[in-house]
Length: 352
Image (tube, rainbow, N blue to C red; front, side, top):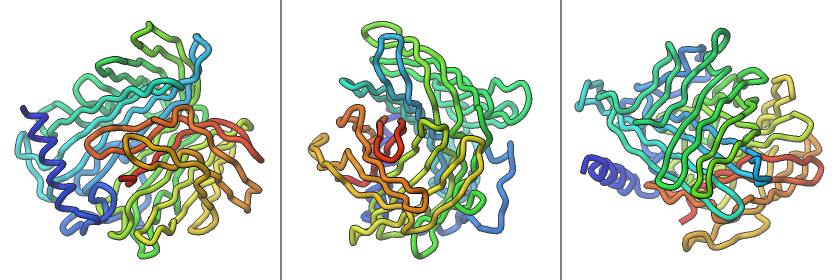
């Protein structure tokens, strides 16, 4: 009953938001804090929650190879959303938490969702030690020294899957945009955004067919804002790419009602040096659209970044990687080839 009430509340919020950005992220943020280009990120404090901002997430994706010879993708996400800028405690807190987890293979896409109210111990994030959780889903630091995100354990469970993974960072944290200030529109909407894209992963997937031992790479994104989209932006197409030579690329395009993309990208060297690229440097062109849960979704893309001589075509592991959650979206592992090759993740929102 409680979960159903939370679901109705989220749906009402989305309905009230109307067309103002995917999931209402383009609505006015009266009373909430707003990102500033003059504020520097501070660690480990910024690994924790920022309740004076309206929306926030801890978002991890992993490209894995099983001992059964199959490729897999794993997603683990914790969202925090504030209903109002006022403070509160216990059941009076305005903080709502939502978790998404998924395991994807070439033939199946399994996902689960959890909802919780903050302030009653059901979900939250602590920084000392770092621990992000919702019920029994958990992302916990195991780092003995250095940054808390250098070593993590990760677990989640759905009706027909579970996973338990260990992650070890092989490179530094990466600040996206201008030292962590990530602009999202021509009118200046923005978020704070940083990543840990250098994880090596080991662990176990528990599937109906049995346990599968996996290894691979993972990417953690941390982002928070109060109005990250302009009110005419209807969704985004986002990629995290692991190149075979050890380099990385984060890139996204935010779609306006006119169909135009506002783009941003960060090139990351194998040792963690970054080069940021503003609007227009990255281009995203759909190559193939398929029907996914009654929607037309572009599951193959051509990605170009001329300043890096990059021209690649992406291919989904499973074109039907639809997250049928409260705010539905497409999220799944991809391969890519062309001037560069490797694996990564693709997320697409706002396709209705």
